[in-house]
Length: 449
Image (cartoon, rainbow, N blue to C red; front, side, top):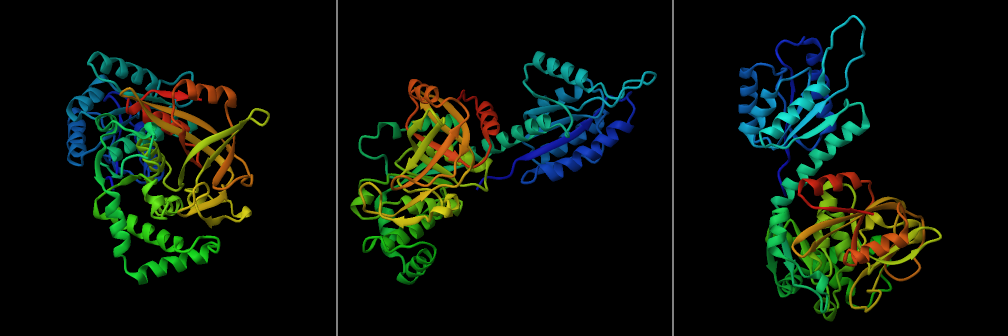
């Protein structure tokens, strides 16, 4: 998998300003970073930076540790030279962070003047032809803290995706034009490398598995779900495919995959819906129906919310009275999403048979709904949000009813107007702002619904 994001955090001032407040901020903000930015590699000088010598030494160390982005916290007023040196000598994104002023006292001097400095520095960088990010407010302000975190999370996703390899298992299902893809546009927008493995290789892998290994997984599955309704041989096919795909992903070096799940897999009585759900709970993302753009969306959500499995799904109905949308798919929902209150089942494919699928209602909770879409060479990101309700399923397959934040009829009409395909990706987490920020860093326009 991708390397961690390397983040440089420095605290600065111009030499004539008192050092008491900058030293205090250095202690507080480095401690905050260690606690709040877990999962990122932090490079933080052990002193406030003021002189050219101090700045150059810090830049050298950050370059040595291959820092990807620098956060510059204003200990006090800072001239344009430090910010300019960072962007010119390092060539990495810069986040200027101005905490609030300390309480004023009538007869006392200004102790920081950080907002003024940030405004000046940002303008100076613009004159030099550089862009930067600006954040106003202390780490105690949820808005400022969220902006810094979302910027860094976005850069982490951008770095991770740029190092990923997507494995294609087959092409696309019959007549699914929306599952076609533009490999060059994907490489340009995300940096993702694409390779392919024939479905025959997967079938050969399935056949070559030791029977004892297959039997062990079948017993594990039988302990977790009632499999009595599965047709003869479908449970063994399920276990063989689960084990084979998991191994093949490692063998071929794929970070995530997309599979042509029908008609060939159905003809072999191994429709993979439930397998894909189980793999998601293992942290292995294999998207269905050959939909590459939905698969990329799924990976982006997994990177931003690694503790929550996403769900590739269709939107099949809406209710204007309750302002809800019903999201359903054949049975690919990860077990961690199942609402145990309604007794999830492992059954045959709900439409055509010939495989394994989870028939289940999904758990309640806040959800973010997204879809990346290549529209004539330019990627767009659709973003929606809502609350998944505690509702039982009303038909076969995996489903959830979501009370949407925006009016549902207008939302559906806008989706159709924007020519967004029918697959959306739900994640049980509020990552709306993080997704929006990540898209902005990749120069991807966002359609907010």
